[in-house]
Amino acid sequence: MAKRPYPNHDDFMASCNAVACQRLLNRRIVEVRYLNPDECRRLMWDCTSVALVLDNGTTVCAARDAEGNDAGALHGVLKSGEEFVLPELNL
Image 1 (tube, rainbow, N blue to C red):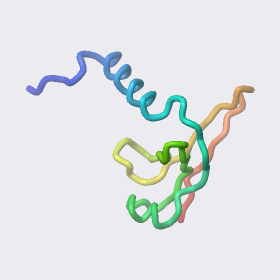
Image 2: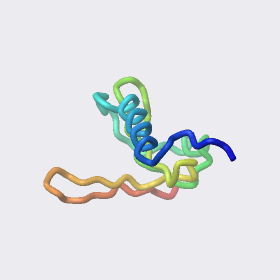
Image 3: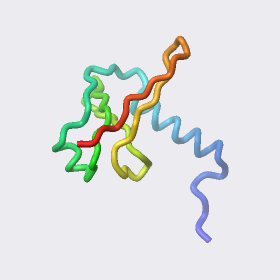
């Protein structure tokens, strides 16, 4: 049996948090838009999702799952507690 790369779930979560911080922490969002049809075709998606473009040129978008099987909705909660959704849209 192959050895698990992380001894437990907490270690796995810590590793994922470290990667997320490395990629996103202290970045500034400079553009918000939906992916265009050409970008969706390259991803082989039938829908489009919100894209956040960061100050270092990184683009982040919502996908249905970790494998990138089509676009996903972006859920948020305002400081006031109000929830919002930026939905995936059919092309």
